[in-house]
Length: 503
Image (cartoon, rainbow, N blue to C red; front, side, top):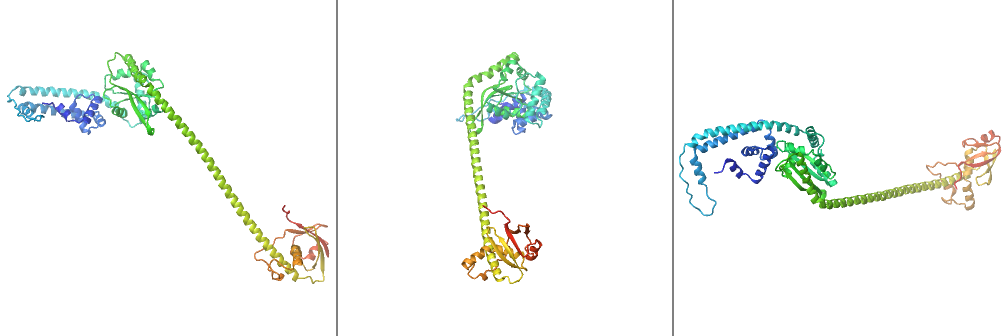
């Protein structure tokens, strides 16, 4: 007949057996049935079961229940030995042939009835001692777990681990990386370093020897080389416990040599070159440190050629990446330059278009004003022909025009300077009429009308040379204006342009 423990193990799946083995390795629990009950209470989650295992009061009550069940089942077997034996024998065979199984006739005995109370007392005493020992150890583990399970970043956990290690062993030790394992992997991948992972449990007897070995000069010198990055942790902390699960650690202390290689898609591939689960026999920390140095160097020698090839491959990838970046940068600069040229060209074309449109608009406006000015001159010349001078008092003016020619004309005494200005403006029209007796607006001079919405601008001034007087008020009476300067009844005036002529 199978024992209760073996019967429970037979009923477990492979995954449950693996979880049970991990739980027992971390907690050092030897009571398999108790471990199974803890795991079942946490749905076989190893991490949650370990946390519950270290919770105050949980294991004590669970161990007491387990002891009572064990005692009750033992008493029941002693009271009914024949029935238990009969059930064990009556189980069907796994053979294909059906055979009749004969069981021996049970015999009555008083020995089990007399021995079971003694056995019950022994089991109860053993359970009490086991629970007491667990409580003593759990208080220490719980305090450690309380320190490591705080809501702090993993980098702080690593820094705390280094501080605790240095408080116990001093500042001379292997160089621990204080970041997360993912950060250590990224550094190892980028810089082509070996990642050395160290895991230990504070409840294992060999842990102090292992920690002391980490301070030995030989191992410190070995792992201080630039080709290594060391990540360490106590499995009492959650992050180190998860690392132990991912690496399938089955004994502590653990030490692994990992090579991180970049794969396709910029992802990292982990290659475990060597691993050490638990320690072999070691005389002292120095001997263990020398053994760890050999453990580290052996895979390095074996995989150096592979590592060099990986380094060359990464260097080639890095060179190709830099070349692509340089090409992309050159392309971007060229593209930006082309875009800037295109933008400048479009802006220049836009400016030229606007300037051309503005010039065309100015030209059209100038042509329109010239046309209106021409119409105004012909209309003003027609008025002058209709209003001939009939006044007896006249003044004689000698006008020197802009082209240097002289014109002598007579004006009535009642005339204004405006009429003199109009006379000067219509000189070209008068000459054209004298030659062709026709206008640009028709053959009849008197049908030319004044343009609407047009204000004529006089671009000259009338000036007397001796004395120099500028006649600007066109509304002034001609006689009064000339008399004020002593130029009545005859005067010589010069037509001076107000603007310099354009080349």
